[in-house]
Image 1 (cartoon, rainbow, N blue to C red):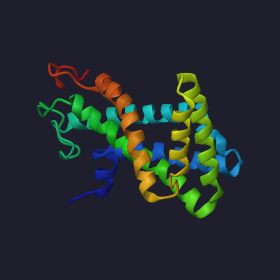
Image 2 (tube, helix red, strand yellow):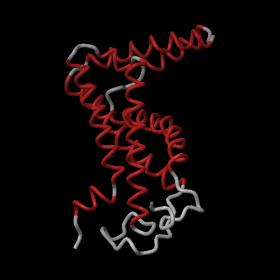
Image 3 (cartoon, rainbow, N blue to C red):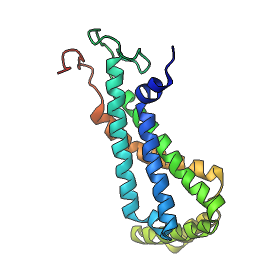
Length: 206
């Protein structure tokens, strides 16, 4: 008989870790808004903390997925609690590990984007203009350091002013962009947490 609890908490742990990470970011944005410090969302410190949360979630989610994969003979959907004496031939390779990282990131970034969507549409529409101004300041500072000319800076600023930040489409675009950037970090995490082909679960279970 199908057991939803086993399915949710044992078969797909990376989804759970993604939800936890996303919920932390979601709540943190609400707290920052309530403290009238929305500009902190675009500060380097917040980006660093958010990045660390995502990395920790990817590591935990991937490790848990890997243990479950190996205990079920190389399958996410093996029978829970099967006999440990059974031979395990499944190898949790790089793409398995990367898939776990992507699942964590997808859930976490969707919840993070959902926080912005809710705040801008139903809580405080003035956040739209605040966010645009914050991004414009970031563009000015970044482009000035990189040596871009005024025409390039003006073009980038105009693109930001035309964005519909409160739209669902824009939220999905931003989530996709962040997924790509953070996915590069996921590649590194996957490279460290994969099992090599010559790894034998039974011989190395100690």
